[in-house]
Amino acid sequence: MAKLRDSVKIQGKEVDLIIQEVALMKQLIKERSHPLSLLRELISNSGAREVGAKEIKIKYTIDEEGHIFEVIDNGCGMNYTGEEMLPGRLDRFLGLGLSSIIGMQSDEFSWKGLGSKLAYQSRKIEINTWCGSGDAIRVEVNEPWSSIERKLIPKPKIFMYKPEEERETGTSIKVFGHPPHRRERPFSIEGVKKFLSHRTFVGFTRKREDKPRIFLSVLGQTEEINFGFPELKFKESKEGTVFVDEHRTV
Image 1 (cartoon, rainbow, N blue to C red):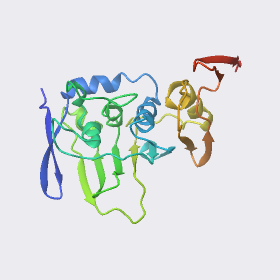
Image 2: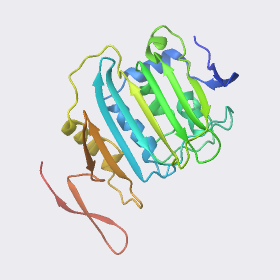
Image 3: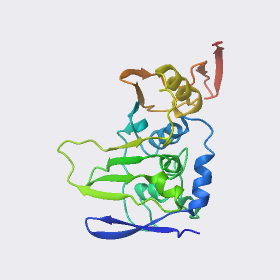
């Protein structure tokens, strides 16, 4: 049985990350319900109220490494603490086991770390994030799924660097070759858009203040997606109850 911890070097300093038992993590990853489930989890992380993103960009392409997914937001960014009992947002995303800590509040849709389980079923993960103060953070995880298949814990590498001038806060997560060793035909922009609108935060049906703008790019074709479930139009009553005004058949 694999240990719950792994070491990562940050500018020569080793820190510990909490990792769930590898066999359980592998099983959870394999139970994904849809080929685009990774996008659902990453978008939920970016779209949570706690993140405060005003804009979310979703990108998909394919090359010799396989399917490549990227989600970019201009929210609060992910901080890193290296503290087991006081984890930052990046600790949660990488750690994979922090949802078991009692008393730690999750985000609106999910605890940071759920989406990363699916991201680890890939050839490579790249994360770039900045919280608005201090150093920016870049993370690389090479061949995470190959490690898991060999009952090893993936080893992220974390780099701290001075952010560019006038840089906005936010996070980009790019996943290469998800899932690895698969060569399905490319997804179409209509197929991805339908999934986003019906199965993710993009199709959020409740009233949302300051809803983010959402842009989708598939194989170089880009368009803005309307926020909210596409088949329903809502009308708000004076009491604040939301009623269905019209249902459209598609």
